[in-house]
Image (cartoon, rainbow, N blue to C red; front, side, top):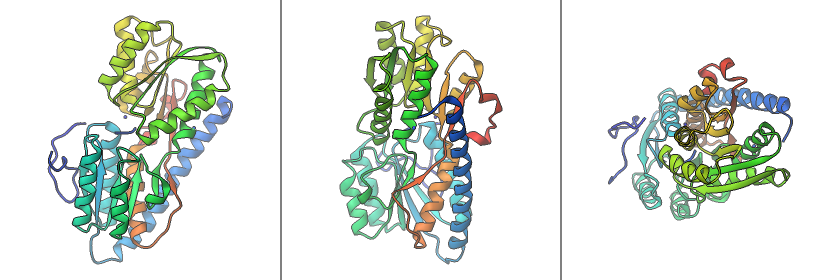
Length: 347
């Protein structure tokens, strides 16, 4: 689920100094779970925002929150930043956005700079759960809370994590895939780099479902960049070798779009191949609406996600303690329900 020239300011995303990331039951029950998740997630954002807004207004100083994301071109992160900026204005905090362009060393330097600048809190979407540990430890030693967003490190190193349960989301996706292809057939898996925590966890969820689905065989499993170009390249190679595959399963909408382009180039109908993605990007939702494109998506509601991340950060600054997970809402989107979902339901 956008690339803009951005100048550094207190509330507008900037380009980096020195210079990604995008969970069973029968269909009816899954739909109920997804709807309940979406409703509960929206309620939690409203409650958290109300509490954090009241707390922030009681302070005379404006806290500064450093944000280290690893992309300002992935649509999910662009929309998440929009939600964060909106919430920051309401909660009277300043945001300093930095982007690592998928470089763990750059992201480490950004966090070190935030520490030197004595920011009040750090929000980070870690490129690598291992490579970022020293920087997380340094923030903790400096007394600066550090909250992971979208991707995470081990629980003990982060103040909390605002995001999805990716293994459960992966199970949910693969259950839809298996059911939709009638419980048998060859499938292709296309993922991002396995070092990214959500990629690893989603793949683990897929594997759990496939272990109980003997009629389904993974004929190609490729890891590449979380981009449309990467999806096009990998899908072209996988589909050329396996033209009769029944499904292409991806963990990113960008990759799913690349797979759809590869299918078009190879003369493979999307009505025959079940394509699944995750993020809820507008082009992918439009593809589902067309009835001749993507078949399934897990919309991650990035604007709402960004609002919840800032609301959580403000509450932490005012002394509230959270468990290891602050869950974010997710909405399943299919050809059957896409026309009934409003734009707001996907944000």
